[in-house]
Image 1 (cartoon, rainbow, N blue to C red):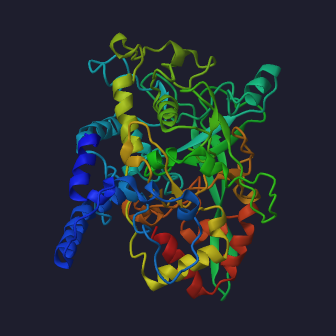
Image 2 (image 1 turned 30 degrees about the vertical axis):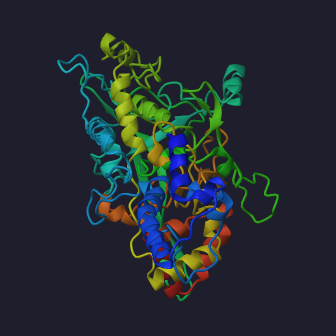
Image 3 (image 1 turned 180 degrees about the vertical axis):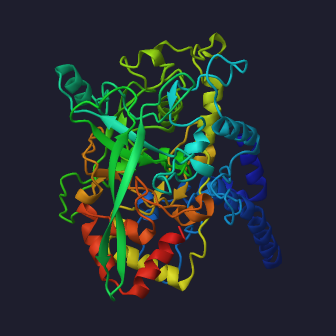
Length: 528
């Protein structure tokens, strides 16, 4: 085909093949130019939509910091590149659309994956052997119950009233004591040592005939913070405890870390960012002395049987979406997969009834409860929940807020742009210029946000920079504006004011802005 096309070019434009061209009249030359332009426009625009802006340009140039804040940058309105959602952003389904440039043939896979993501699992044995295996101890019956509308979870809304969404959980661990435990941490085989009775997280629900492990109790105290212009903002300072323990006391020195479920959008794009782009922003020793030291978390990959860069989770403790999905299915719902084969979920040897309970492992599903065929579909769904488009990015107030975002140093950690590399099996996620506003690195956020619980390379005060894309639609999708890892912040302003450690300088600059400028900055973040 290439040979024939070359001969054809020689016939149309002989000069390409060394022959002397025949004279062409100005009228014919103009007509030919118009025809060529018309023919090439769909190809050019199609390449932009499907391959993103990164196909023919250098990554450093594309991801360079903004310098002109009088107008939007090219592509800024579509933070997911060609994969940006084409669905409405005015309703609660704004986070639930598929990648905007995905081949239509994959839509069925996406929809079946969505059905599995939403499915309520039941205890074993059951007549529906493709849906049994819940628990015996668990946090939720379905993925969707934690990731509400594919969005952000929350702590209980009202003190003393149980929350039926169960979109918040409590991680548990203890300090390593034995040489074996220390070796597992050093080799990254484990990110933390599970609490000996209750395991790696507290399961607050159980199937019939079993006791739940306990319940999270939160007490808040209000802390006033004064801002420039005389405004006072009150921050909620949480105190956590576990009550109604079902299997005896916690081990001495138990460390606890509350976590709400994060949004699901754009995960496949974040996984497709080449490691070298992420590591280029790392500065663990703050060599440039800018006060920002970002470091990577190195964690064990179950899929590849080696140490890899952590990308997902509040402390970047998981290297891939597949592993995140498998570990959540096992720890949160109690489902075994070929990656996490424990049919009893997170149950420990101290919970013998849980270990002895019937399970849903089935020979037709690789002797697990969530077989590979179903798992691949729910993983595909998780890869392809699309990032929504920006709202009013060219509004003068938003553009001024963007300039302030850069000026006070927010963009030092919330890196605006990356260019994705090759996404195996998902070409629509490849070579996209994306705008997640994260560096996927760990940063010390100070004592105020510290959970005092190490997680892999992350210390008790270090957290992964949370992506900001879609954050302005939280209320539309989830009906609340609760932010940070435990939902303590009731607004974006409160979330900023909680920043300490490496974020302290930017937080202080924000607090000193005029009320009008603070509103401009918040307008920008809300447009993401």
